Length: 408
Image (spheres, rainbow, N blue to C red):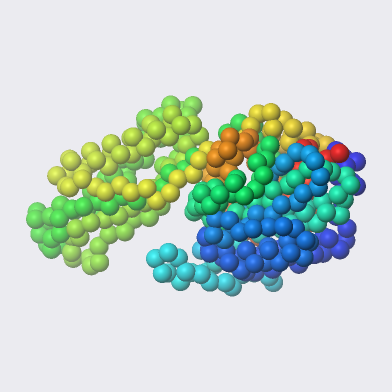
């Protein structure tokens, strides 16, 4: 694989074009399922390269590179940005704005590095087209919208992705993270957690602030729920099981001397196994219902906002990717890592058709930044991976993974 990747090495022109493309994506991010300009920019590159493509899942794009008989392999890059005001100070920083579903105007930033994912995949495509005599088969390029809201993979599958594109033997994907630039990290088995987000509306009885005896105070009630929910992980799960229960928002009332009739909070729950997920969700529901009953309040309303599947790396395919990445990028640059409690909807792409998936991470910060201890994480307004060797590593990781199946 080392010799193969050397033969596929980026030219100076290809690297320069990758940098230019990355800066364009970074400066112009769009919110989930609204990636219209991003979609058009991706299609422009595919048109330039003469690659057939079609739209799927609203703002998604699927490209097909056909090069004779051989395996079919899918590779996914997510495309959406986040409602974050960028504070990196980069000369290509985003000043874009977008509108949330509720009509709120917000700043938008590629605060999770999806711009590096798009660029790495498109750059790898250039190299594959240049070296078509060195591989054979079909590559399905999946530029997926809406990863941040768990909407995109489902939208593409529901829109007939696997009716329109050839069925792959394996689907690969990757993500930049605040690790050492030039390195890749891979997990065997469950790589990322399942996630469930819930909205809880606590109903009470409104009264004047001076007459609490006439109220059922939803703020006090919801606060008791929030406190008790913190015991699910600490007192109901085995210390050997992993889960996270986070209350991310809490809203109630309009004036300091009015006890309102309702309060609302949102929950985010992470788990690594279906059994733990079921246990935590049941405990959450029990606590919310029970606290309301104790207070003599109406039953709260619990609504699902979204959920994410577990991101599970197939055993056999993961071993092949480990071997390919270590051979191509150098054994010292590829490490095994434990599961992450972050979540991804990537797994649905393979689950929909019973196809194995493999997903890995590549670093985005240089050694000096890591040594400083000031390392912005994904979803931070300061998240700004160094361009190199991040993009070259991301591109080489794409090539190494694909070539494990299609390389001659």
